Length: 291
Image (cartoon, rainbow, N blue to C red; front, side, top):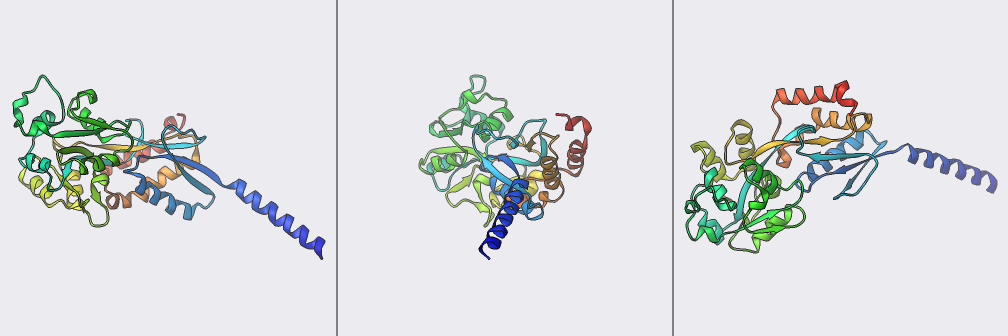
C-alpha cells in the first residue's frame, strides 16, 4: 500500500511540475499613474488565460519578455492621457493663482524664459514654488515639450521618483504648484480631486471653465475628448513590445477590443474610433510583426 501511495504522489508531483512549466510569464513596466488600470486588465485577462502569468517590474529591471507602457510614437496606442496644473486646496499658492492662466502665463509661471515677459506674473506669483518630476515618463517632461520649453528651464525643485511624490511635495508647501496626470490628481472612487488638491484655473472657453471649476472627473474626461486646448496637454499612450511574440500580441489585442471599456474608470481618455481601428490594423500588420 505504501508503495502504491508513493507512486501516486510521484505521478501527481510530475503533473504539477508539468503544468507549472506550461505557464508563461510576461513582465510589464508601467508608471504608477497607469498601474491600477493595467493591473485590472491583467486580472481579467488571467481569468480567461490561466496559462499566462503577469509580473510588474520597476525602473531598469531586466526581463526576457517585457511590455512597456510609453508615449513613444511607435507604440501601439490604447488611450490618451491628460495633464493639469495643480496646487494644494486653500493654500497661499491657490490664492495667488486664482486668476485664469493662459498658455503664455503658464510658461511664465513654470519656466525661466528670457523671451517672455516676467511681468506676466505679479511679484507675489513669482514667489510660487514649482515642483517637477525627473523620470522618463514624468508629466513634467511632457508638459515642457507641449509648451515648447526645455525641462532644464523649469523653475523650482525637481523631485526624484514617481510623479505621485509631486502631490506629496506640494501638500507640504503652502506655495507649492506642480503638474500631473489626471489619475494622480483625482480620487477614482469619488471622481473628485484628492482632498488636499485644487486645479489651477485656466483661461479656456466658457464651457471649459465651467467644467474645470466643477472638478468632476467624468465631465473633464468628456470635455478633453471633445475639445483641444492650448493650456492642457493631451496625448497618446501605448505599449511597446515584441510584436512577433503572439502571447503579448494577443494581450494587446484584447486591451484594444475589451479592456478599453475600463479607461474612463481609471482616469484615461479614449481614442477616437478611427484611431482605435488604425491601432488594431497595426497589430495585425505583417511589417509590424517583424519588429
